[in-house]
Every structure is written in structure tokens, then in C-alpha cells.
Image (cartoon, rainbow, N blue to C red; front, side, top):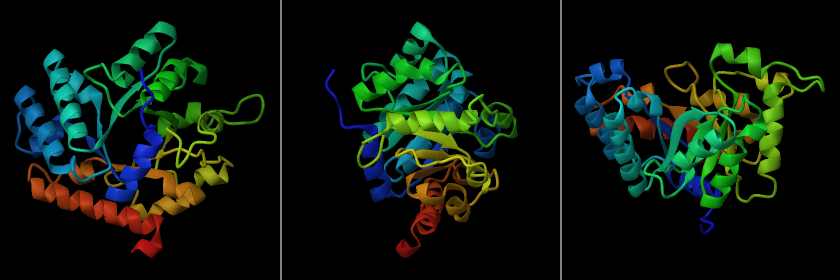
Length: 286
């Protein structure tokens, strides 16, 4: 396998050209109903492909949530394959939100599913869970490096339940979250303009990361869920991420998707969020 251009370089270019925004493709039943679609394969396909049509040529990253496709079985996964292929063909980077985590050959198989260019679900990046130990992710980290893909590791998530694991303190005094960020910082060392190994850090955290002494500067992207429906705004980003704010990829799902199925309305909403983020990250740009 030839070494492709690293994901971090491709992501930085996409963020600079299209604005730093990731839009989810989350076809859960309530959103399908809001769009006037049935909760079936036809509704799923119409939803996913409409989002791709509206946004794949405009936003930096599209993030399909795999579970909402998998619940329809093999036909749902076939829709996911088509959405991924069409989104990538239109120029968007696709981040597969699968949150896989396992050990050994099973982790290697998950990695091959999303990070091997020969796979029908090959994506530009995938989310993974490190709570079987960071080392358990090595098959995904290595394959991502080989294929020019990226990996986003859950670190400080926006759900309140995450704190019982992520804020736990190790014997050396470091929190689990800080340990994961340290691993990613080492993974990204020396990469320019940005590393390919990112962290998931909720935009709803306020100043808690800085207050806890957690260093978010990992020379890699920080996927930030929580903008919009979960209550965070673009204006919150500098407070949460500090000096690392330029590496933040805010994720918006319902805040944009609720404007469907009208393609123009989806585009306008995504553009508005991207502009808000751009101004928050770089006030001089506004």
C-alpha cells in the first residue's frame, strides 16, 4: 500500500477552504419523522443522500453515525456505503462515527473495515474508544498512518456519564483523559501542518479542561460535539479550547439537520454555523 497524503494535512486544507465544521448524518427516527419520512430503508436513503447532496461539496467534514444505519441491517449498511462514497466523491472528508474499541485481531478487523482503502466502508477517519487501554488501538493507529486516514479517540466527551472513567485519576496523578491526550500528542509529534490523530472533546465542557490542568494542544484535530442542540455555541469554543482552538472541528448535527429536507435551507444553516465558528476561532476573519 502506498502512503497517501496524511489525513491531518487534508483536514487542515479542508478547514481552511470550507470552514472548520463537521456536520453529522444522524438519521434517527425522530429526525426522519421531522422530514416527513418513514422510518424505513426508503426514508433512510432519502435522508442520507439529501444531506450528502446538500453539504458534501460545501462542508469540511461529514460524520455519519453508523448505528443509525446498522439498525436497518444489511440494507442500511448498503445505504451507508453509498453515502460515504458519494460524500467523498463530492470532496467532503468522511468521519465514520463508529466508536469501535476492542483488542487484537478484532480491533484489526474494525480498523480494516473503516481504514483500508479496499473496504466498501473506507472513510477518511473513524472514531474509536480507548477504554480497553490506548495500546489496544494500535491496529487502527498503524493502518490509519499507512492509508492516509485519521483516528479520533474519545477523551473528554460531552455526556455526563463519561466523567466516571475519563476524570478518574491514575496512580501517577494524571487523569485518564489527560493520559489519552498525552498518547495522542506523542502520536502527532513532528507532524505538519497538523497530525492525523485527534481527540473527541465536548464543546459543552466550559473551562473545566483548563481548570483540571488538561492540555488540549495535541498537534492534532479536536472533534467538538455539543454545538447547537446540546447547548454550546461557537462563541464558547475559545473558552473551552484556549490556544488549541484553531485545531477544533465543531460538530453540529440536529442544529443543521432540522432544516431538511430543503437542500437550500440545509446549506444556509451549515454556512451560518461555519461562519460563526470562523469568527469565534479567528475574530480578525469576521
